[in-house]
Length: 231
Image 1 (spheres, one colour):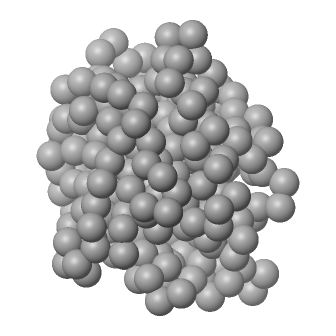
Image 2 (cartoon, one colour):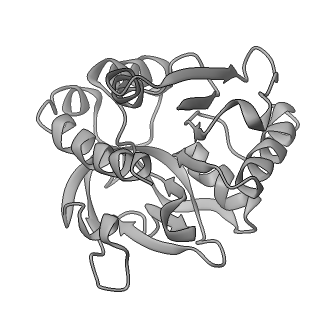
């Protein structure tokens, strides 16, 4: 299987998704939007991951490649591919699916619990995820749930942490399941500058010292990826 991902900045890559891909002998390619917009042909890949970044989805004047990226994501969805967006990537998916992206009441930076709605209205793969677990967050914006999508994750600071469409073929995750420790440290080094204190903004040392949360967050993600690969 061929996995492609859209990378917005050098320090936000696939994380443990790449580890999972290597272990399952899948190929991985990328479009580095901070360098070029050479998008692949639709027939050249099976899954698309849209990663995070410090920019906002509406900053098209500053980042003109956002227009082309949105068209590519929309085209990929229309081609019936599996698509997952993380943080900025989830906001981009929400946007191309007609939902509003806007400033959240709170900035959410650090490790905070997310609750999973495991009710019977959701498919089995949603119910297989933990009912609550610590996830990593770094965002100031949020999104409305696109028409035809279902919300399944929420945190105290942000009501919409995750949605899916078409049974789970398309998934948007506002929080990060994929990051490893080195990815978190890179975010701190690149983005933690003059962050305003708030009820959902942890300091740098508190974020760095949260070593115990990675394994379970990765396990939630692997459940989703294993389910995708079985389809």
